[in-house]
Length: 139
Image (cartoon, rainbow, N blue to C red; front, side, top):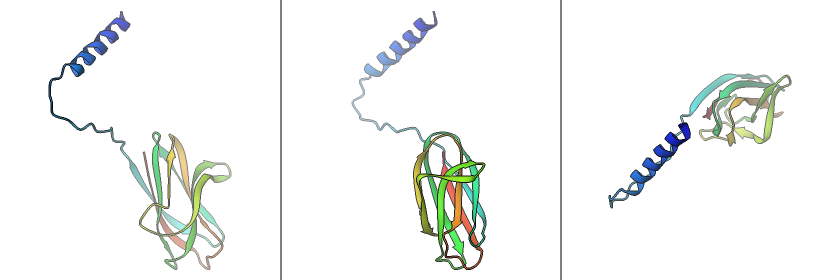
């Protein structure tokens, strides 16, 4: 009996949609995905790296932005999006770059639900520990 109810509801919905005599055009909007922004701060030692893990609730676009790093403010840092494990944060293929802090995402990609991590590392040019702020915006 349940399939019959589902078929009846589907038929009623189809009839209601096709019997509309309204001649004005409407706008159909896509469902929006709620996004979360996580902000991480810390210090990368000379020759070292640091990572932070975060949960992703569903498939969608993830943006990573190294928003601040100093001294100096022009220091180039390694930045990667990856998966956490026993060996640390393993970068996802194609999701790493050497960057200078800025106000726009340096890494953007489609991710699936699960636990991910962001890795910040010395690329070999630090002369002192570097304080950083990184934001990750994800579904």
